[in-house]
Image: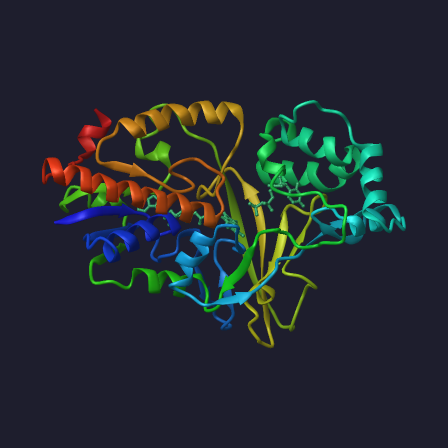
Length: 385
Ligand code: FAD
Ligand code: UDP
């Protein structure tokens, strides 16, 4: 008898499994339909011996001391500040937009933050309260920089115009008036020294955690006993798409190993206006690995394939709300993670969300145990009824 059937061995599932087993002595069965742990953060050594991220570049960054300390129990870190260049008008320019981006694109020689702020102010359009991903950029830097750096990248990445997406999508990227060229401004920025998979192995190495990998939970759910489910897969799929499919954006990853030491000056180059791919990542910059060859990945966005990104806009939020109501009415199943709560969350946000669920589960145990010793039970019939 397991206390929890955890569906999905990504950050959401691994954190809940680890905490409930190690801190609360619960018995956990962790199931993933992929044949590995780590979810989308999975990394591995490829045939050339280079550490690569199978599902695209994963760079850890957070402002949360709690999240950083939690993960630090399972890994040491390699200091790494992420830098990205965008290929625009035949030049490589820093993204997020900063003083150097403006000087390079417009062949200017602005020197002070005030001059850059004035430049932006002279181009920015008043959009009132920024509602869409177009508004948020155009209201800060104006239409030309928006078109050079954001419009086409977004159309490629999402299959939608920025005007059809929530402001939160492009608002992930700051605009700077100084020369700071780091992609993230977070207090903690680092990579797990021996990779994400090793960190997950350390998290999940506990006698109370059993695994079923390469297995859809529906194939075993009727054959195992457990009290509750922790579900981290797509929420609409859990409910057999009863309200219709929630849109998720997918990616096709094309990995390549090259017989050269480095291909690019930085880990990631974005291609807003050229090529069918959005960006090219060279892993050695992220991992610090020394090797005479190098490995890169090209990301081709599309609608078909594994769900990677929830698509933030009003229509999808309304549809998700219906599923969320169903989810909260489903006894004995807890929904957590990027796909199960349809949130465009980074890894640290998923860890924080999972740690919050752990607190709730622990409080629930205390409450229930004072009333009755029984947990919830769950069956597929109960859900589809
Ligand atoms: P997932 O990692 O998706 O795990 C869910 C797991 O559930 C999957 O392994 C899936 O196989 C399994 N599953 C689903 N349904 C079933 C089922 N029916 N039965 C069994 N198993 C099932 N975040 C950052 O902080 N920094 C980054 O640089 C970054 N880069 C990213 C780049 C890309 C290309 C992508 C797609 C995401 C990136 N992220 C990044 C986000 C990060 O991947 C997520 O925040 C995090 O991995 C989500 O964890 P999760 O556990 O919620 O979901
Ligand atoms: N974006 C863009 N141009 C860029 C970088 C980002 O238009 O050069 C927009 C695009 O819509 C993208 C969003 O900003 O999807 C968020 O970018 P981020 O790098 O955070 O995306 P992720 O790493 O999650 O794919």
